[in-house]
Amino acid sequence: MLTNDSKTDPVIEIRDLHKSYGDLDVLKGVSVTAGRGEVLSLIGSSGSGKSTLLRCANLLEHSQSGEILFQGEPIKWKGTGANRHPSDRKQVTRIRTNLSMVFQQFNLWSHMTILENVMEAPITVLNRDPAEVEASARSYLDKVGIGDKCDVYPAQLSGGQQQRAAIARGLCMEPKALLFDEPTSALDPELEQEVVRVIQDLAREGRTMMIVTHDMRMAADVSDQVVFLHQGLIEEQGSPNELFGAPKSERLQQFLQATL
Ligand code: ADP
Ligand code: MG
Image (cartoon, rainbow, N blue to C red; front, top):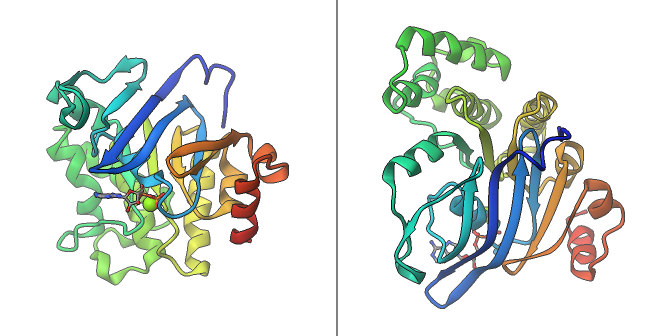
C-alpha cells in the first residue's frame, strides 16, 4: 500500500508517452507514476491502450516519444520517432529483469514442471545459485498456495493454479515491481478469486504493482491509484474512492455502468 515516500520514490515513471502502430495512434501522451509500494490499476475499454502502456513500460514495445524512468533512471534512446529504440542493451536487460510481467494467458513453459518454470529465469538470466533459487522458488509456490504442485506440469493444473505459478515465477526474480496484464480475465469466476487473493496479499505486503484489469472490485480493493484510459489518453485518474465512488467524466460513468 501507499507509503508516505511513494511520491518521492518513484519506481516507474512515464512521461508524455506516445506510441503508434503505423497510422494508428495508440498512446497520445500518457503520464503515470508508480511509487514504491504503490498499486496502480489501469482500467478502460478494450483497445484503449492499456496493454500497450504496460508493454512500453517493460520495454517490450518501443514508444516514439516521451520518457520512461526506472527508479529515477531515464531510459537512454537512440533515433527518433518510429526509429527510436533503447540504446543501452544492458540497461534494458537490467530494467526488464526488475519488472516481472504476468500475462492473461499465464505463458508457462509446458515442457517444464512448475518448480522448473519458477527456477528457470533466476538461474539462466540472473546466474543465481541453483540451490538457493530452488529454496526460494519453493517458498514462493507455498506463498501462492501451490507448494504441493512443484513436480507437476502446467497442463495438470487449473487455470487459477497456473496463474498463481506464473505469479510465483515473477516473484522469484525478486523484481522491483510486478506488471499484470488482465491476470484474471482467462479464469472462471471461482478460480478468479484465488488469484485475486494472491494479488491482495501482495498489495498488503507493499509490493509495487501496475495492474491492467477488468475486475473493478479488485481494482477498488487493492489500488492506491486508478487510471482510466480512453482512446490512448488518461480521461480520469485518482483514488479508488474518487474514480469508483464519484466518477467525474461522463465516459468513465458510462464505462463503469457497462461493466456492472
Ligand atoms: P487494451 O489492452 O486497452 O485492450 P491495446 O493496448 O492492446 O488495448 O491496443 C490498443 C490499440 O492498439 C488497439 O486498437 C489494438 O488493435 C492496437 N494494437 C495493439 N498491438 C498492436 C500491434 N502489435 N500492431 C498493431 N496494432 C496494435
Ligand atoms: Mg489488453
